[in-house]
Image (cartoon, rainbow over all chains, first blue to last red; front, side, top):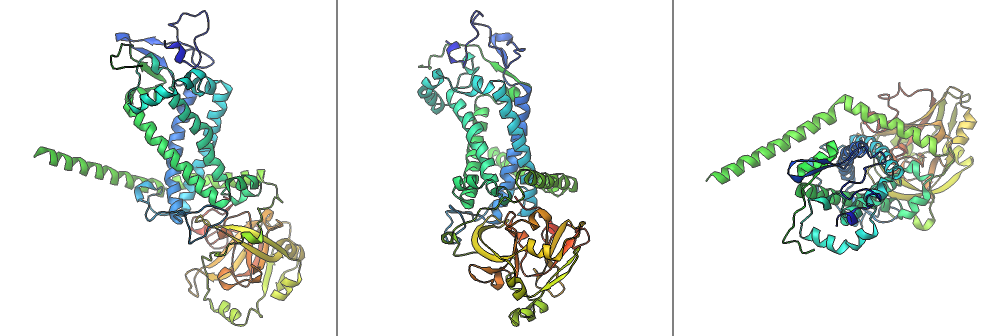
Length: 270
Length: 256
C-alpha cells in the first residue's frame, strides 16, 4: 500500500521491503531500529547544508529588508511613486523585526546585498544539484498518484493528522506543491523583483522591468513575495514542530529520519 | 496563586531573553569586522554589473505621458551657502562651471556656454535609495562632451562633482560631493542637466546644474554642481569614500 505513494516504486525485481536508494549513489539503506521503527536516510549533505545557509540568508534578508522598507514605508503599483496614493503604508516597523535593530538604511543595505549574494549562489547550487541528480523529479515533483490524493491530503492537513509510519517516507502532495512553489516560483521571484529594482541592472533587464509593471510594481512584488515566504515559514515551522520537532530537526541535521511502525488506526477513515 | 507568579516569571524571562537578543544583534551589527565583511559585497556587485552590463547599455526611457506630476525633491532643496545665494540672486549670470584636475585644458563655462554645446534630452526614472521612484525629463550637456573638450589625462580614473550645498546649511558645513568612474562618466545618458520637464532646472532639483547618471541610485545625481575634477583617486577628498553619503556608510557604487 505504501509503494504506490512513493514517487517511484522500488526497481522491479527487488523485494518490496527494500527501500529505494536515496540519491544517485544509493549508499544508504534503511536501518532497522528496536520497536519496529526504521531509520531512513532522508536528506543528503548538500540538501542539509544549502537548507541551513538558506535559512540564515532568508532570515537576514527579510529583517534587513524591513529596515530598508522603513526608509520609505509606502508601496505603490506602476512605474513611479504617486506619493498621495500608496496602496499600502506602515506606521511602525518594530525594532526586533529589523537588522540592524534600529533604522539605518546604509547598514541595512550592506546586510541585504551581502546575504542576497549568499542566497542566490546557495540557491543556484541547490537548484543545479536537484536538477542534475534528478532529485527534484524523484522527491518533489508530484506524480499522477500524488495528484489523485490531493483531496485526502487536504483533509489530512485540515485535521492536522499526519502519518508517522511508512507513509511518511515520501512527501505528501501538498508538501510537494508547497516546496515546488517556493523553489521554482517564490524564491526566484525574490531575485527577479530585486534585480528589477537595480538601476544598473535595468539597463539590460528593461524587459523584466516592463513585465513587473515598472519599478514601483517590482518593489511591491518584492514585498509580496517576501510576505509569501514569511507565510511559508510560519506553516513550515509549525508543521515541523507538530509532526515531530526532534525527528524533523535530526533529519535536516544528520540526514536520518525515523519512521514509526505501521499500526492500524481505528480513526483513520481512509 | 502559583500560576500567575510563574507566568510573570516566564514573561519576564522571555522579555529579558528578547532584550538580550536585541542587544546581541546591536553588538554584532556594530562590529567593525562584521561591517567590513558585509562591505565585500559592494565590490562584487560593482564588478558583476560592470561585467554583465555593456558600457553603452541605456537605462530605460519613458514617454511624456509617463512623467511624474509630483517628482519629489529631497536632500538639499534650498542651499543657504553665501556664494550660492549670491549667484542665485543674480539669476546665475555669474555662474561658472570649472572643469579641472587631471585634464589637458581646464574649462570655465557659463550656463550660456553649456547651452551652446550639444545637448541630450531624456525621460528617465529617478530611484531614490529610500525606495521611491519619480520620472522626469532632463536636458543637458553630455559629460563626455566636456571631458573630450578638456582632454582627460591618461592617469584620470574618476570624475568628482563638487557642490554648493551643505546638508546642515552651515557656512562651514561639509559640502555635498559625489564621484563616478569613467564608464559612467562617458555613458551617453550621463549629462549635466540644466532643464527639467522643459523648464529651467528649479532650485529644489539642483539649479543651475545637476548630474544625471541614470544607471545609479539618486544620491549619485549630484545637484548644485560648481566644479568637476578629474582625479586618479578620491582618497584625499572628504573622508575618502568618494562622496558625501559614501563617507557616511552608503555604497560608493550605487547601481543597486
